[in-house]
Length: 160
Image 1: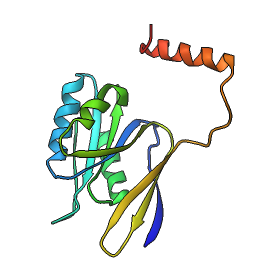
Image 2: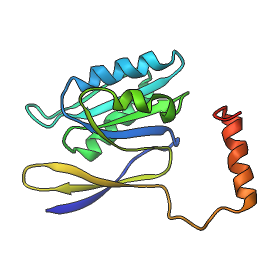
Image 3: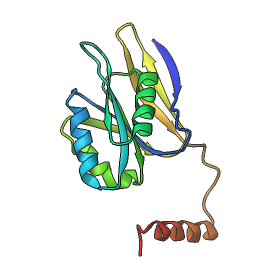
Image 4: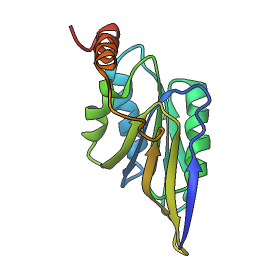
């Protein structure tokens, strides 16, 4: 077995969701869930098929995000893994709907941070072991940090 660190390419720091499912139907079902979540949400998604032709399957409503998803799915080339890039929306707005898609097995992460994916490769194929989402923790928040966190959530409209 070989271990690989795959750096997700995300030059504009878009929000993304990385997960795993079990069926080619995932592409259309995820598209429907995302398109139905908000008329302003832009997205691109790609799915690594892990049998038959073993292609990267893709969909979306934004050409740039679709290309980014396809490129990163091919970099991962790991069985039944999907990646969704989002613009004009946040994972928090769609994550439960994505998780509720019947063929979705797990979500590895939802982030806009720099992301590395730990991939194991055997003679059979590749699989995701885990992710490194962002940077190492630097300390514990101060009272000022608490106030800034609360202000940020209110600026985004998630708290009153």
